[in-house]
Length: 238
Picture (cartoon, helix red, strand yellow):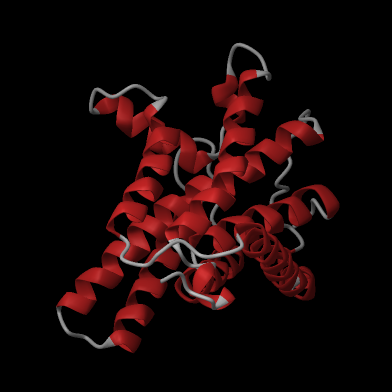
């Protein structure tokens, strides 16, 4: 039977697919209109995933298909029926995403004196639309890589090792958050390492892991994208 609980419905893989698919579609289609070299506008996690897919002999276009395929496959293995009233669930997920993004943004503003030299998220010369696409890409691909895949795998491994749910969650959240923070300093386009910024990003990673664990993949994608929009377009100094 379908669940009548909104709090359970938002975590259902069908709800996550329906919520994330429009963002993914807007990101991928939007990039096609940015000129002959869309790679320069891609989010870092998206670029890493595509580069590694190419290394193993798969076309770069496999990246969005991988995200959709994982969500569709998750629907097939789920034993729960699809939730009722999908529009109401989708609307609730949007509201939760906005509220969660605003909470993290509020924390970042409170820490502004400490983080005021954090590199601007909006690259020089980019139009707001170009930046908006990057923020959508960050929400989708960083959450797919660090929460849906990495956090999920670590959580599953420690569950299997019978560490208990609290320890399993804590270790998975901390490990995925540290890797998430460190990834921003990797590669030629990575930021210069700063301890305070690293700690803030690690804290944000724990926040996103907790949101993913308690509220589901769809909401954490929306919250991440929403935070990046707030931080990059409204207050680009953070």
